[in-house]
Each structure stands twice: as structure tokens, then as C-alpha cells.
Length: 383
Image 1 (cartoon, rainbow, N blue to C red):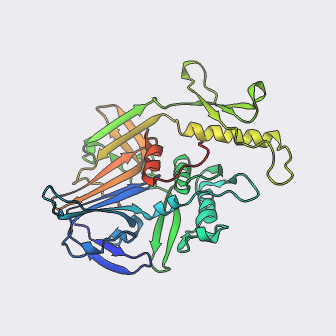
Image 2: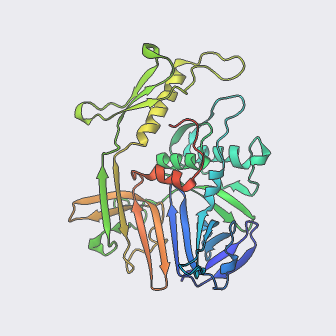
Image 3: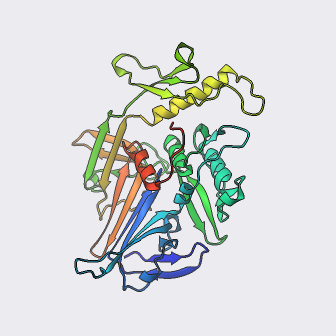
């Protein structure tokens, strides 16, 4: 059994638990994740599992979670059951407590840069150094910016900050996390970059998941166009025939899947006390960017879910980990696919331990799942 450590937000170690009924750790590259722990209430340390405390597997600070839910119930005889159910969210869920405020002089907080810089920009403005000091989370800092990820042109206005991180992550492929730094007694926000472990690269040993190589047991493969769109009609400001319309995409005929994007919130004028018309090229660039963002949410959905064999030659967190791009293969199905590991579920019980993986970042319900995990107020304007 993996020992579980308990500490306060001030980094005071409270206790360590080595016995429990079950432990499930769900790690998410783009989204949030969850820890669920079932433990007999009489076990040493169980009484220290209090809401607000931070728990993590022994020496795995990157999996640290804050306890947000404690549950115990009465049985049919009116007596308390023996087990607590403890649920904890990864520390990056703290970002779900903030909404993106725009600067006082503009309608939107705009940032164009590589994805890592854009992520850090919104965390800085809304968590680390907000204008309103009451919004500051003083113990959160930024990890070193390595300027990773594709160029992103982003604008945000009263959106849930964690959801914005998730969407930038989806578009760029970067992961994100908040990790305790016990030396500095800070919590570092960091962007993450997975390794390329696919079969066609030669820098690192490849990770090939296949029943043929005894590295994968149960496997589910899904490809779907139910939510697919590849051509956007983007409508800006104006009414009727005078409305500004742009298109994004170049497919034709049966291959074209059209999507309407309402982008009337893209301003035609500058902000401030004396607004003036914005250049057409600038407005059109914003509309095209909005269309591209929407199309990214409606790509063809190809993903796999699989259970790693317990005696696989590929070792979790050594030969592969969350965020790595690996090769999946099932010759009987005629399927070979390079895909990112976007979710990992670790299951620990007295009689077994196993790891379940989700591959691919375009699961049909991913954005909805992220929003459900956060359970936060939504922004006033949907992309």
C-alpha cells in the first residue's frame, strides 16, 4: 500500500497513513483530477483527514491534493458506518476559485505569446499580483518560464481561470499543475511538457502499448465525427447585411462541416474614454482567432482507454507518465496511433494495484467534465 502523508497548507506535516480500504488517484493533463480515499475511521491518522488539509502519496508532491469532501453515513440501524470517504482535488483546483478580471481600461485581458507565457500571465493577474489585493493567494508563485508551447492569441473576460488554463492546455498540448515547494514553502504554478516516446523518434526509448507486446490489456478505441466541424462562419458586430462576417477553413463539398460562431463581443473600437475605430486588419485577426479556437473544440474525436498489465515491461512513471506521447497498436483492429496520455487513474487496494490510462486529448465530454469538476460560475460570454 502506498503511504499517504497529511500536511497543513502552512507545510506542517501532521501524520502518515499506511492502511486504508482503497485509494484512487486520478491525474489529468488538461483538467483537474481527483483523489478518493476510503479508510476505516479507527485507523491511526484517519481523524487528521480534515477539510482543507493537504494529502499526497509518499514523496509524490506533484500529486498533492486539498481535502474538499468528507463523508460518513448511518447504516439501516442508525449506526455510523466504519469508513470515511475522503475526496481531495489537486492543488491546481485553487485556480478554479478565481475569475479572470479584465484591466480597468479595457473590456478584455488580451495576451499574445507562447502558451506558457499566456498561462503565467493570467495566473499573475488573477492570483499572484491582482489589482485587488484581497484576491491574492500569497503562497502561490511561478515556476521558471521556459517559453514553451505554440503561439497563442488569447482574450479573457470574467472566465473561470482553471477553465482557461484547461482550454489553453488543450490547444497547445502543454499540461499545468500547482506543486508544493517545501524548501521555499511556496506553491509553484508550472506549465508541463510531455516527452515524445513514439516509435518513430530515436531520442528516447519508445513506449509502445499493444496486446502483442504484453504492455496493454483491456483496450477501447473510439473514433467519432459526431461533434466534428472544420469550417467556421464567424460573425462580428453589426446587424443584418451590415454584420461583419469572416470564414475560417478551406474544405469543400461533403468534406465541409460548418459551424456558426457568434463573436459580436469582438470590439470595433478601442477601449477608453475616447474610443476610435480599430483597424480592419486587427478586428479580422481577432475574429479569425476566435474561429480557430472554436474549431479546435470540434476536431475529430479519436481516443483510446486501456488498462496496463500489472506485469508489463513498461513501468509507470519511469518508462511513461502522464502527458507523454506514446504509440498504441492493435494489429487485429488495424489501428496504430500516436497519442498523448491525458489521464491516469491509479488504484490501490489491499488485494491489487493497477493503472488505467486514457489516450488522446479530444474526448467528447472533456470540457464538460472539466467544468463539472470545478463546479464554478461560468463566464458571461461563451467562446
